[in-house]
Length: 311
Image (cartoon, rainbow, N blue to C red):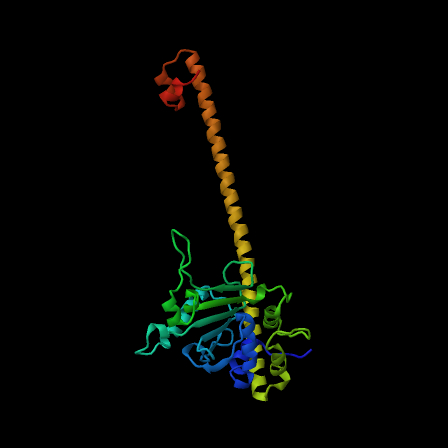
């Protein structure tokens, strides 16, 4: 079986080439359930290569033939505020592409595709989709566009006006490819394309992302990328396991301290109850002999009310 290039590195170096658009078009077509054609790869602040791109996200900004903007982000390391990063990315892209003099009806549609290799949020699925709808608080109906608005916006759904978000949680995929999109996710996770896979773009990916076809310069860069990626994951897993061990040791120590305190408190309560029982017994005997309540209280340390309640 051919050794293939990881998709995140390919996005950074190879898939920006127009000759390889068919690979990206195949992936996006399967994900969006549509026939996507790429017009161009755009540059923005988000997809400039920086010094931390070895383990951080890789951005690709695509404009399709409909004029829609598609952000592709791959996030390898854990990022707790990544959901807000997605919001920031789409918002900034909308603002950056709204020139002076343009009407609001000319705002570009943005599709945010996020491929993450960590557990983002809490959920059982491995593909999540989100958009914006407006639901009535009393009638629970979904707000729709008027006929005039449909002509202005060229759509009949409000949700199509707002950014759409896709989250692919790669590591949560169980390696069972039930459909063509699953075949792509299998590749994203395992860097492998099986001979029986039929999804759009995978045949071209199998040929175009062959490691043996890399130039010497690209091969050196890719090997460096893989080393950095492995080092980062080894460091992360090592720290995670060390954290678990330290946490376990701290947990045991805290548990022991809590156990000691509980035991000491229990002994203290038993001692107090024993003294109280002795005081009450002495008070009963004193009352039986007709002693004055004030004298009994002074002798036993009990209150007058407590003595009055004794049989």
